[in-house]
Every structure is written in C-alpha cells, then in structure tokens.
Length: 286
Image (cartoon, rainbow, N blue to C red; front, side):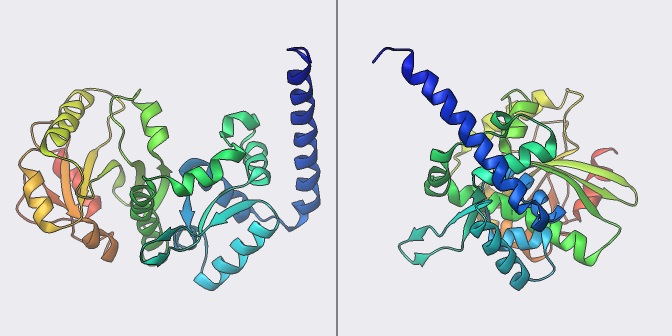
C-alpha cells in the first residue's frame, strides 16, 4: 500500500460521513426547535453541561428538560454519560454528538471543523480530572442565568463565554473560568469568574493578580473580577493577596452565590459589607 492511498480514502470517508450527517439533519429538521439549536450552541461553547444546568438555561421544568434531552440523545444530537464516583453515579452529563456539531455549524454559519467536535473526545470530556471544576464553574453561571430569567425580568445575562473563549480574548494572559455580561436597568456589567475550590496556593493567586494588574490597562478588561471560594475561611485567607489592581475585585463563597445569585453576597476588597452583583461596577467607577 502506498503512502498516498490511505489519505485519499480517509478524505472520501470524511466526505461520505458529512453527507450522511447532513442527511440525518434533514430527517430530524422538522422536529428541531430553536431551543434545541441553542442547547447545541451552548454545549459547543461550554463542552459539558448537566441536566440541571441545561434546565436552568432553557426549560420551564426539570421534567421537560429530562424528557427533551433524552429525545435529543436518542436522535444522535447529544451524547450523554453518567460519570461514576466512589459515592455512586453523578447526574447525566451532556455533550455534543456528531449530529449536534453539524447543527451548530449550520446554525452559526461556520465550518464544521471550527466547532471543534471530535468523536474520540466525547468520553475524554466527561472522564477529565477537571470535570468537577468545570461543572462547578458552569453551575455558577447557569444558576445566575436561571434566577435572572425567572425572578427579575429587568436583569438578563446576554452573554456567557467559557474558559477557551477567555483565553483567546486575552491571548492566554489570563484564563478565567468564564466571562458574562449582565444587563440591568442602570446599564451593564461585564465580569470574569475565578473559581478556587481550595486547590490554589498563595503563589498561584499572587501570579493571577499580577496578570490582572496588567490586564486592567487594556481596553478589553472586564468591569470586575469575581473570586469564588468553597468556604468563608478560604475566602478570608485569600483576600489578603487579591489587591493591588485598578480593576475592581470582589469575593464570595460558592454556596452564597448559588443560594442567592442576585443578592448581597459579594464582598469588595475595599469594602466591609457584601453587595449585590449589579452594584459592583458603581463601586469600581468611584
């Protein structure tokens, strides 16, 4: 067999596979909703989301979420797995399947390769040692989206981006766990999240703050940096190394945020009382 024969067959197989996927899309197109397409786009951006997180983003009830997500899995649009731990099984974790990746490409008008889907990465995503961190970070944002859309119509999360997008935006200088823009009656707030689940030492936090000090001079800098911790003791310990930047910084525990995302849970570095998320920009601009 020559060295050129196999690549030729591979390209043909890839084209045949793409034609097959498009044929499947045509068959399921009538049953696809705009919400289904947005679910696929979210999974393209954030890679792995649980049933609960997708419910918080897109559904009116957890029962409807379970039913529809199961159907999208049956159609080959989503792939799911329930990772096991020493305490038992975790909830269903969803990621894109081949058909879902093609739906994203057509919905956004981009090349399929730009979506970044690879068949062999599906299990890698849910077996990753960073899955717990990614799940917690995504849960931070989905909870905020849910509370904003269901309890206060004057607030809206109009953009939420993941770690990879952040790395591209700031050229790897900082790699926060996510970026979001929250619109409110007084304007909008752009923020990034740094989630520390107790694994980062003092030196690591100091290095991050040095990078944010430099980023503060850029026109693309967010309005505020949020540091979220697993306990109040960890929060209090870390606050001593988080200063020294012109960019506003605020801290909270993850439990506080999840219980009341729009409440007075954030403690600015220059403050002695906790304030609401939407009030952080006002503090930073004074």
